[in-house]
Image 1: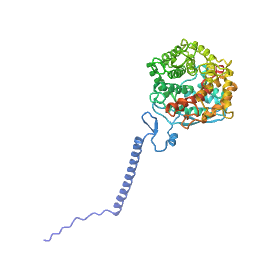
Image 2: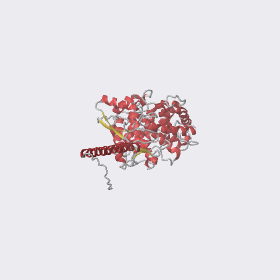
Image 3: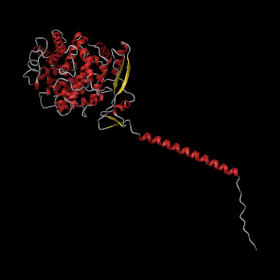
Image 4: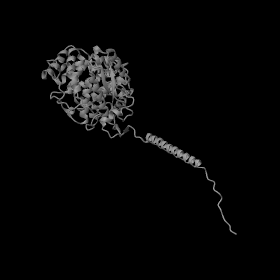
Length: 493
């Protein structure tokens, strides 16, 4: 029997059903592809946000540096803080001013500068705009002695306008302060360290005076950390040295300069901050000055009392005046200042100038004599002769350009005193000196905010060490802050 096997009949799907499945599969793969792409994009964004390097990275306390490979000069404007502190510096002659503003986030970081524009159109705007600067400083102006009232608040604007300060001058001050911040040592001091703590104490004192002259204290938004580091270094070293601010076992020849300068800075700091940590150290330091005064009323190297030295005496007098303004009522301060005035009269020269150790008309020291006499009693009396002699001697060298920073006759140490003496004296003397010095000092500034070696002078001011750069930069900043740093007693704001 033949057996045959036939497969069961196959059921064939309609063509339309197969096409439908193909269509569904195409949409499925398209949807799957889109979702995969979206997942990949989302993952990339998340990973990028997590792994992306910050704009800046801290590197060993040397500051904040850019992570990009672009040159630093191009990266700096992009690396400023999102909300920079605005420091407004008004212009008497120009209503628009670009101002450097910085904000430090931590004790060791350095932040790039940012540019801020301030528009000032009237005298009222001038006072108002400058008054806003008190928000960025560590002192409101309340409780300050009248002679220091120009450092902050509305007093700053009044002083700038009254004393004819140009907008570019305030910008130069801000650049200089920023250079100091960037070049502060990790321990809070300034200087090369090659000269030891004594040399650094003098540089630290001068640098701190610059910040204080601009109204900056340990609570300032911009420079509070810088100031606090410096003050802590002073407190630690000074306390260990029992108030000898040269930080040595005794007073050496150069140590008396360092002691006077740093005591001066500490006195100003206490007056502005009322930081009680400094009270006892300031008293100790001032007592060393009082004890070191010679029988003639002056001071000399090593506080030996064997002679008097006008250059040494100038810094001790400034320190004593700062102690007087502190309102601590340290015994012997006023009496020491009175004796010092007697000494200054004893070294007055026949033409009104002042000598090194005896009656003499010496141009390099005459500003010391004039300033210190005005600083304490404010008696213009026979000081007029000395002020006129200084101006005549300088103008005789070059009537067209009496002061030349790069000239062989430049002496910024003497100019530091001449500038303050001229402002304190006021009137025509100040008008003449202001025309001579303001543009010359501003024009000499380096792009980085420091000042180059001058054509004349000697000692550290000519050195290319960090100490030399700090020394001349601080002297120039202090000259340019004269417009508001100390007001004459008869015009205190």
